[in-house]
Amino acid sequence: MSNNAVTIIAAIVTVVGTIIGVVIANRLTASRSYKEKIWDFRRAAYGFILARLGQSERIYDNADEYITERSFTDYFEHKAYSEDREEIAKYLKLIRDRFADDYLILSDRFIKVFNAWEGEMATDPYGSTEVVPPYGTEWRLG
Image 1 (tube, one colour):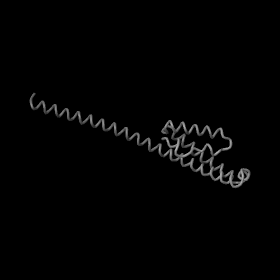
Image 2 (image 1 turned 90 degrees about the horizontal axis):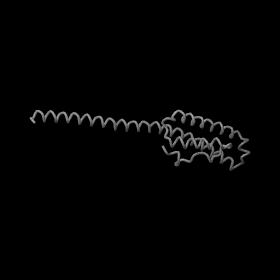
Image 3 (image 1 turned 90 degrees about the vertical axis):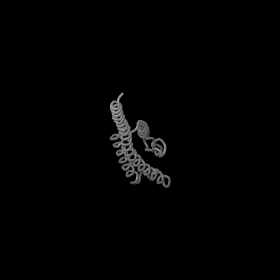
Image 4 (image 1 turned 45 degrees about the vertical axis):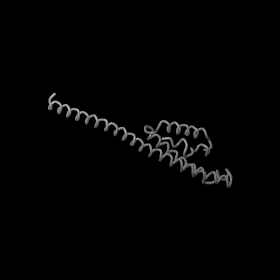
């Protein structure tokens, strides 16, 4: 081979190698960027849902304190009972709306846990605090 042929082949190999490198880098970057974007959306949805659950849990805790200090009958007859129920209903609506809006981006595991929790809420006629999900366990799955 002549020097010109070797130079041409080297140039072709360099160009092809560069193109392959650029394509691989773009695919890796696109995949990483996609995963980061999905996580950003999930984080916003999870944060919103968990914050509203936390607000509901505080209402339940306050109701438990009131009942412990006085009685369930006193709490039930007090205006705080209806105010608490309205407040919790408001938070649950916000939670369900956000869950529905972000359903496609939520992880399958989160959806499973959320649906199980909703099932417990539906079968508990008293709105027991036992069904409020604990922080740091299944709700932090992502």
